Length: 362
Ligand SMILES: *Cc1c(COP(=O)(O)O)cnc(C)c1O
Image (tube, rainbow, N blue to C red):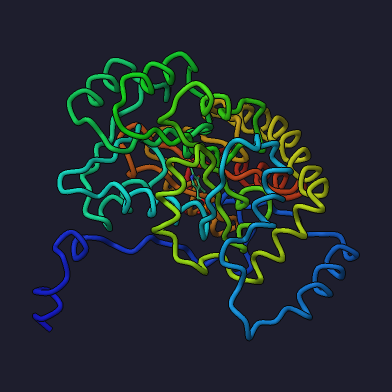
């Protein structure tokens, strides 16, 4: 099969596919999903709606109605445009393809969302990761130096940041935007879980775009992300978008969900309340350091060398979280826990307390 090795780009041969663990029958606290489903009446109204969709036809290519629904639900000013993606992952890919001149660069703080680097690789762009400080704040000097040195076409700033969960200093963000000659993307995947938002940056800077997704508010299965900003940018990106990237089932389901947005917001509110409880309960476990979170997940540091052990101990008890130890030097001994239902959170705390007390599994 040497033809495979000859034909496929070396940087692709070097990759390992994004690992998605089998979560069958587990309490799933690994992927920032909303743990709640819909009330029976809502489910019924939704399936009624899907029943009559003409699946023999192509979907509405512009998805105009859905865009209006999103603008309305999210309070997006009419002067800004919206571009839709099959998840925000696809939007990151469209952005990368749009700027992928030879030598083009994507820059992002690290630890951060892994898809920035992966998509840079897929699209043949350079990737520069700039380490955060030890307490996961932006290292302003290092960021400004890297921006000057590498002149990145794209900078991604996730707020709140994944996997750290925190918000960064607004003034530092502004100075990074001002130093950039490229595009700066504010990735607001977790906007539902914080009061801070960055739409105002669109007014102040012509080279900023804001990216959001429905994945973290309860619609991860739909795959719908959006990019918000000036039409000068979005008109160009529209040319790259696959005409039918948002399928008919997604369009109809998302519109239905937006008409019932209160239902999602009630769940989100519950998760925000439970986040506070979970942070307190985690902090009460011997040896656990809890980092501040404005998202629907919590980053913790466990006693030295125990992260993998605690992760496996939870897995044996049918609870799946994310072990971040080994992923980045700053994430040594770190675990990431998605906020679940009140009951799931209690089970997690019970299991973790047992594991912490026993010192080690086996
Ligand atoms: C989850 C996540 C996304 C991607 O979400 P999609 O499901 O592709 O819409 C983007 N950015 C960050 C920071 C995330 O955590």
